[in-house]
Image (cartoon, rainbow, N blue to C red):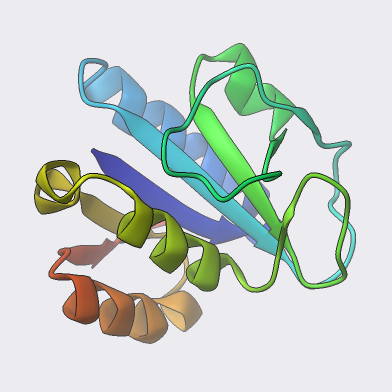
Length: 136
């Protein structure tokens, strides 16, 4: 299980990285979590891809990733409908805690921005999940 985390300000880099990861290894599940402190630069839509372990009500997704068959979920710090209400790394932590321990043992977390890296490494350390940065 691969987890890619970014923010709306890095949307292009997130979509590019997600596509590259998916094309390089289409058999390993990929989940993209995208956060925003304000509104998103696109119109979120309800996801059609089931993500076990996702907190109830978190159904908003990135339309372009859905079109490629890549699961995504959104977090919003201003309480947008269908989004996780809080920072994106908090959503990542909750999701990782909710999935089966055997899946979490296989999880790998990647972040697009250097500013998320330290916080992601803290979450990864707590849950024993490796973390790396992908270049935008």
